[in-house]
Image (cartoon, rainbow, N blue to C red):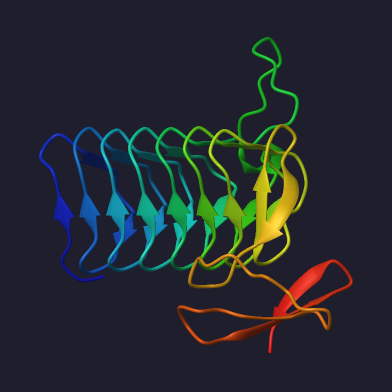
Length: 192
């Protein structure tokens, strides 16, 4: 992959690919086998686990660890100190090291995860979903959903551009920022 910036205090293991224009800031560590797309920003004290895939244009704020088994698609935002997990029942006495133990988590394109959120492994965060700060995600989150709380629950819907969607009686909403139109049907939102 092309040229990227790495602060001198950060470490990048062998067998790592980092895309052009990506910036890796202070005290961060990218472990072997990781793949980071182009034009990403990794803040201070970010850890990218072995074999993690991160899409293009992602922004990972300070103090975030992305463990093996987690995949971020393009344009994902991870707020400061949010947490991913990759094992459901960890035990120090009976270690579960190795990819066969890790439960997969997928964060789809354009999703935003607020500061201090915890994502319990094995779930999918939908496209352009918004997870409020401090939430605990214990199940799949649909596309465009706004979720908050512990456990995280849907309290609204947001457009791809981050505008709150207000649906009319026919279940149609238009994003003021982008002009895109959305349909609410069967407790799901679709761009039309």
